[in-house]
Length: 132
Length: 132
DNA sequence: ACCGGGGTTTACGTATACGTAAAGGTAACG
DNA sequence: CGTTACCTTTACGTATACGTAAACCCCGGT
Image 1 (cartoon, each protein chain N blue to C red):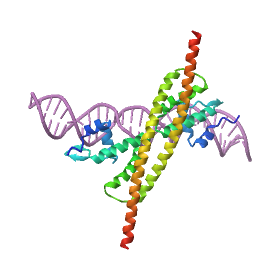
Image 2 (tube, each protein chain N blue to C red):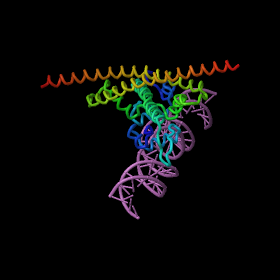
Image 3 (cartoon, rainbow over the protein chains, first blue to last red):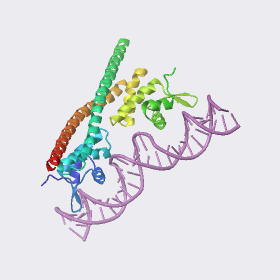
Image 4 (cartoon, rainbow over the protein chains, first blue to last red):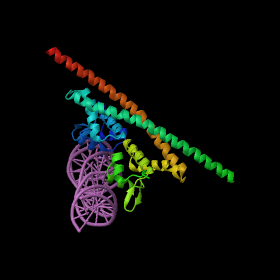
């Protein structure tokens, strides 16, 4: 079935380089199967990559992301150290919620600065036309 | 006036190392004054450091943060390239809002995974007691 | 048989964001 | 005057997250 993607298809789909995918595999973030030499990225790999890229956008390190992936991995089998992993997840959840609150604050501040800048700009334009 | 802080006071206040502060100065993110050899970090430096650290938490690079700081800097004087800087700010605002939306989604997903994990854990505990 | 277009491994290179050690100035304390 | 405490500059080292080049295999087409 064509649920599995080649390395290039993965790259085109997710906007990453082959190097990145091989690097993630070496770091045990992805586990593509092999057809001979060639990597075949399963649905599971695709889902994981999505989470990896999202994690990165939030400033998580690959190592942190790897731990998060363990939680999602649980659905597909093992239940080892489930409660331990839950603890990690709780931490991440708290962190993300805090981050959200801070982000809201930052957005508000930035908006304020921008509106100041905009009115200032308008004032400058007004003075320009006054001078003319 | 003791509005200005020594390097160590800054470190204690913000939880960074002297190295970090000197590094930020070398990258033109901070502009401490000098009393002889020693750096004195003004109120302005303290405000900037706050923004730097927050930017970092959101995954912005120092170079990106530096551009954002230019906008805030505007309040204290120059109006050079104000509209250009506004464009940068607009970009950051959009990025942050998108990040917020994604963060909400991620939080929801993580919560779902966690509740699944919790019920699974409960089931396991039930089976344990059944066996006993 | 050859070649291009994919894929592979191995390995050195690079940017960012500092850590850390070396070597030294200065001011106060005993 | 020596030591301690704190600061300084200079400069090499390090972790992360890949980029990039070299050298190779393999498969389909002409």
